[in-house]
Image (cartoon, rainbow, N blue to C red; front, side, top):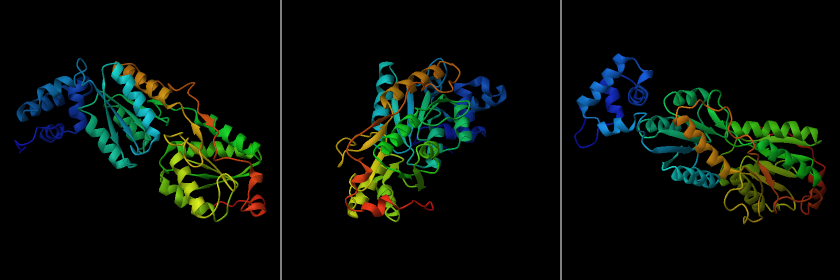
Length: 351
């Protein structure tokens, strides 16, 4: 029995009709995707329970809720500030409301959020997803979805070309005399992490560099501090990290150990987050055009909500750029570690 003290939800209707919540959502938003018998059972259960008819009306294709959702892996990460702002600005100009949700770096929380959004959002932009491709395609069967920073076959995906910036980073470090590079990896479930590492491997060897990887680490300052301790076991001359927060944590960890940046070790991040330019030292970083990505994401989601087929990759031309600041310098400037660093080959650390 549903308590009279709270409104009836889609979960109550699903339980009464003996179907999944996704089936209830489809019965209202895409009735052609469920059988006539199932749709009738869902509507009968909704009517019996007093499920808000205005909610059902808004979910119909002719209406729409007027709301889109943005789900990010960690809302505390400043990387998302410009992206969210851009999506929200584009949506507002189109008379659409934006709701932002934090998956807290958890695939389980992300799946739950996406399921709960079915009756209240017309579509969703997902960035930094930690769920499988199969799970993402299941969501896309129920509502329009645009995935950022990761390709998922059959879905609309915007994947800015970070590899351009990574290649520029390696060329920059090579020009500065660096030959030994450590990559500090981020979350194991992040597609972009593996993509960056493959780019480093391919281009590092071409440039005559010795490269190795440590991680995975949480994409946070605390994660960077932990990585710094591993880096100091067998120091490289330069470090490239999964994101800027890791880079900042690495710099702090190295500084606490008396190792200077860039005097002893150069450090490069990815993201160009808020604060990267006035960090101490100002952070050299690979920057994606996040405002352009956000605008493109809303444009693509709008297409899907109008019934257009998914685009394979709507991010063509959105390439990352290397922004050189004060955290990188010549390899020959090792004031503290000197020849011990410059002449020591790297080994591969365990994850």
